[in-house]
Image 1: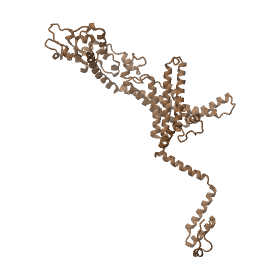
Image 2: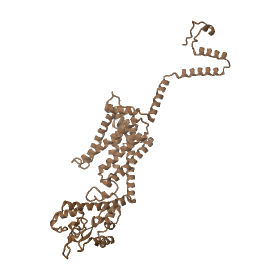
Image 3: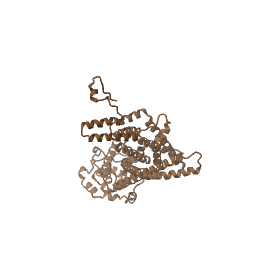
Length: 539
């Protein structure tokens, strides 16, 4: 779709006595044809990707689990593949880790027993008299988000932050009992809870083997993990989404999508010009033309269409600008969405199509390049949005057909999808446009809005007044009008040169005679006026 809708005759709707479909098709054919050409014929110019065009922390963490997600930036993929192997000693020998252990003696009682567990109430860790402290009574420093998880986190590598720094930050270090810490090892919190449920005989962090985790303890474990994970993710998000790498990738992706959309919209306009010209050539052919004549007509139509497009280069530039803006906005929106959730390929296309419609409708509403009245601007914008909605519905139908056995047949499936999408979009567009033109309610609304004072209304009123004046002038005898004008001009000049009342009187009497005007008295004027029964009659 594009602002070619502005070319529609916004004042003249289909005549009631005409065939409805013919009238609507004649008025809106260009709208429908270009929307179908650009949306289904030229969409191959745009490469939509599952998850957008820019790597996000949310998406790279799903690579491997979601087969449709891949790295968008090859360098980011190389950085992940070339990461160093996880070194447990390096993470646990960090000075920050050792200093916290060294300064934690105050949390042990006189028996050397740990009494302040981050995951469990302190009351469950009671002193014992044994000389050898059991594992469930020993305190060990734990990485809440495991060091292994942080080291191998694709989001962490994407952000460019050091794993040892993140793992050994104060927010991620908590003391717990040695049994829990050793059982957890490199497991995530959910993996550890699952392990405890599957291996109750090996669990001994509370001094009682075989005792399952209570829901209260599970909630405490998850709450502590979620707190640390949130603080960890905040650091990644702040560092990556403000980095020059992300800004560069986002800018390049937006410009690339903008260029693709611009080319699609501009080419769509050119192809519609060719379609119009070829159709007119074929319609003007005489009856009983042979195939050669038809081919020549099509060839002439293509040449005329290309020439027409050249002459209308300003409109091509306008379509290019609209497509570029729509592409940039859709790319930025898609990237923003993928920070929080993964956009499917069809959702990316939907966002792009929505922006294509919104940009065009906004141009009509805000800038009104064709000086339409307010109601007609609303109607034109509604046509754009309705056609855009029809394309989205058609595309959705095509996606559904693609999931059926027919849609999965090689080559044939793609043809069926495209045909079905185009058919549904075309029929729905026609139906909506019939409604916009034939609905009594819609026409009342549009006519009411057209009465609102605006610059376009003023132009319309001036044009109507000039049209009425022109119609009156068209009925005049121009030769006679010029002769009469010359007579009046000669009389005016003579009166201007008169030097006495007597001369003025003589000129006026001559003017009466020249113009064929009957004098409203007879004989001498003074004698006539002296008779009270006489009357002056002007004819």
